[in-house]
Every structure is written in structure tokens, then in C-alpha cells.
Length: 257
Image (cartoon, rainbow, N blue to C red; front, side, top):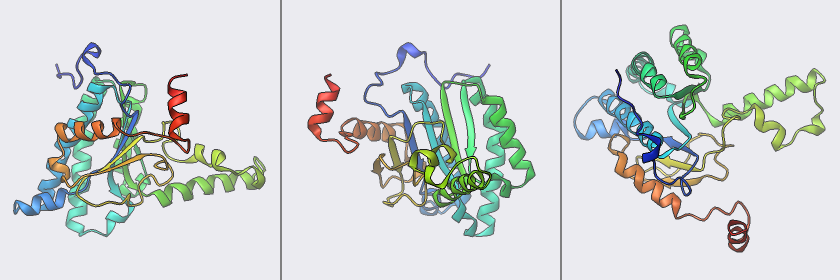
């Protein structure tokens, strides 16, 4: 029998100051390997271990959504050997991890233009999504061959198709009419964005969805970003005042209403 990723719900900490949705750019695998004179793929393998750990922490704390940037549309420009290794790791993870995620009530899905990965991986993704679609403990979303520009463009294309078909008018187009056609439309917007590896940019990740996210940057390389580091990010988030355009006084009044 597979051991549970999550403890009993009675052991979970108070979720009042926790994000509902955490989005992470997992940066630094290659540099981690290089510092140890290892091939870059060794860093990616170590990074997979951290994914398991983050899933476990989210399950522990009752965080409902975890979205990870695994492969951007720009990553195809990396050396062919590394791209091939990443594809092999992705395929292996789909084969080895999905059953355990399903047993732990985790919903798995992938956002991005997955057809470019080829029919074998695309089929495995769809089968994994179908297997786990009714799970409710955590939604784990992997952004693969994803870009924020692509996401917005494909949403605009869908609206254009509907306008041409007479299903909507150009005058109807507004942010709230575009949002339903974006990836993650059925999830709350990320509350906390984390980027490891020292860079301080969002790199074409969830450009629309991160509009009001708290942005947390850490120099820790992804293979070193362990439970304790994640806890530190969550503690930082808990200390933030999220105003969404309001004043501090308005936020405080709403909190005590």
C-alpha cells in the first residue's frame, strides 16, 4: 500500500493566513548541477524530488492549488540534449507519479500547447488528467510548453471565433469576458508567486493571472528549496497586507465587519 502524502486533516495547521493558490517558477536546476560538476539532467532529477515535497507541504497545510512552471515555450531553444532529457524525465514522471497522486486525491492537469510534445506524451497527459479529474485534496497544475503571451493570445482567438460566429459582440469584450478563456479559468488567481534561483522576473508565466499575486524571490536554487524554505515563503506571505486597490483602513474595516 502506498504511504499517504498527506497527514490526517486534524493535523493540518490553521489556513487563515495561507494562500489558496501558490505558483512557482522552479529555477536553478542546471546551476545546482554545475556547482557539483554534474550533468544538468542531474539537477532536473533532484528538482523532481522537490516537486514531491512541495505537493506534500500543500497537502499538509490544505493549500488547494499548486501550479509549477516546468517547461516554457522558450525552453525549446535550449541545447537539444537537455530538451530530450527533460522530455524523458517528464514522460517518466507521468508513468511513475500519477498513481500515487491519484491515491492521495490529487487532481493533476497540464496547461500549455502540449501537442508539440508528441502523441505519446500528450496521450499520457490526457489519461492522467482523466484519471484524477474528480480528486479534491489538491490541484497540481504543470505549465508545460506554456507562455503567458500564448495564453492571452489563444483566449483572444477564441473570442474572435465567437464574435465571427455572431455569438458575442466586439462591444461585449472586457476583462471579465476574456478571463474564462484563459488557462486556470476554473481556479482562483495565484495568491503567492515564488521564483527560486535568484532571478527577479516572472518570465512570461501566468501574466494575466499574477496581477495581484504577492511576489517572493529567493536565491535558493530549486533543488535546495526544501520544506523549510517553503515554510519561510508562507510565513512571509502571512505578513503581507493584501489591499487589492483599497486602503489599509478599508481592509481593516472589512476584516472586522
